[in-house]
Length: 295
Length: 297
Picture 1 (cartoon, each protein chain N blue to C red):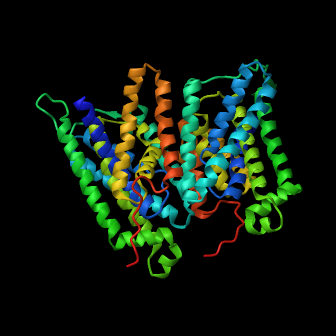
Picture 2 (spheres, each protein chain N blue to C red):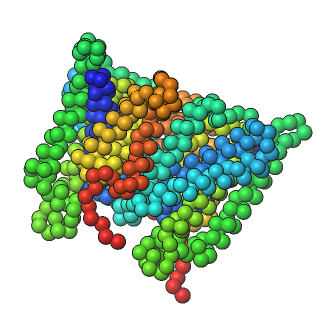
């Protein structure tokens, strides 16, 4: 039981990183990124590939961050003159493209089998992964990312991207360059997500193209929407809640003795119902964004 | 060559029915409904269920189209209308939630294994070296016939005129006595029915499974966006472009690029072709190829 809770907590931390990153883009900058999972996937693959060539983990993580930032830069440049819903579909296409490449280039990514045996970051005496230490690392990463996101969103940059979200024309007239702002928001978010992806790769000791399924993006979106779009703490709460629901379903499956198809349906349906209910009843999420008063 | 044309036409009619419905609804409600591709999946399973209860295939298809249309209208009235008050991005994410719920329901009832319709194996027709089955001919005829009917409805009848008025200026249309709610409901019903038809046709030529809608998501959106969202005939042209490129990419010999022969793009990259075309098109025409609207900053 203890190790299961630790597992859920670690995954929650990793997903909280994804949530924070998506929130920076979607919540504050108002960019509908439906291909977000590409950043996490690029990070995960970069970590797995560099470590399979024998380089230490920090280099892999760093490499992942750089690769994800490049992807983010191109995504944002692509969106420089697209309407938001067109950009959403374009990012979805970019993510699917990257997934198709990962699925087919066996020499680089192991194809559909993915890369297994990604080394653990902390090893206990018996050679298996030291879960408590990994959890602490993930928690520390979330704390750092949370601190960075709060700082960013409260500062001048945060004000600028929120103004861009609400009144793009006004932001332009005040002298803000919208395209560089979008690029900065996307690239920062890509870096955070990539760190999460690298952690996921080292934690699961496996990377596969399924990490980049479009449905994964939608899971992260669900976390952000349930927690509160535009509220950093809400997003972390949302990640914890959704991950708890996700992890509880296998228990229910064993307990009620239902088939795996039904279990998958219950999982997906629960998330869908919770998301829809949240949108209808509390469009701002559980912890809505605080709008600061004019004074 | 004939085989190539047949392949293109089959793929086009599959994508077209769903993409045209998506586009025409977008022109009224102004948000891309991600759940729309799941209506196709729902329609395919509806036909399957009715067919299994003993109805002949054509009646089952009509029943499934009506049922899916009703579901689309109900979802629009009960869910999307309320979500649209909070903005189009919220409605888009809401349609994501709806599509998760629809998949979950079908997965729970029917499971994840694929099904086929028991319409009886018909002997394929041979034209020269090309083999084409009756199902495929039905699928092509249905696809192009329905889109032609839709075009007539939109551009030659009073309903179509009021719909176009609603999409270009809702306030003015309401002031001249167009019943907005009725037009929106009618078009939503029609798009749901078209999606169900498209899904069933896809199920007829391939198989019926729970991932049918999700597999359609990107080709359909690529077609609708290429045509310019809200422009139904553009979406039909987009579908044609997507399927031509998908089929062409796998049939062309790229050997001349490398000075050898028999260099083909792997079949697994078929789906990538449509995404690349979508991205390139959006780079040069940010609002789709067939967009005519004038925008001012």
